[in-house]
Image 1 (cartoon, rainbow, N blue to C red):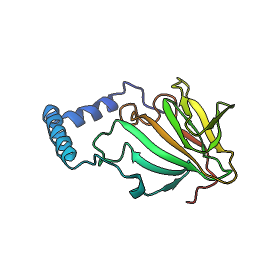
Image 2 (cartoon, rainbow, N blue to C red; image 1 turned 90 degrees about the vertical axis):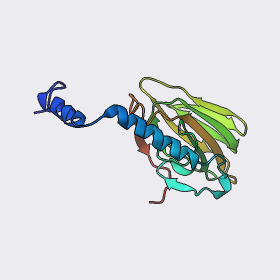
Image 3 (tube, helix red, strand yellow; image 1 turned 180 degrees about the vertical axis):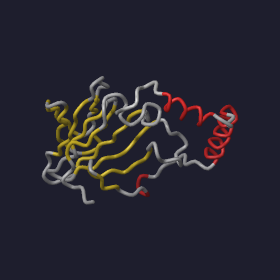
Length: 178
């Protein structure tokens, strides 16, 4: 049997978290840690020095990510996605609210079943939708990679990863090597 939202055990858990703590002081301590981290932060990120990550979505270089503490700001998620010649990204369902600058190449984005063609210097905007969007990118050039610069607000921590509409990997990129 599942607990009700106002189950006494849930409330006791919260009371246990509060007992013996000074949460105001913890905020001040967090502020001091953030200030100390800022003193050591990276202000200029050199793309040539970043490793390329091979993940279920494809090939990415992360400039800013919710789990990276080194950049001087942590309010954006920013990465470059490379799609090899004739290949595609993974297919994903997420809230949207992402801007994609096509740095190199040509292809199309399949968003909620509709094809949107793009080429170098175009901008693709994935709208923020209550029920999210399903997206996959395709490189139509058989000889050259496509490079997409992708940016979105870092709402992963403030609104949790699902962000109200779900976050699911629906198909893995064919270039993924676990």
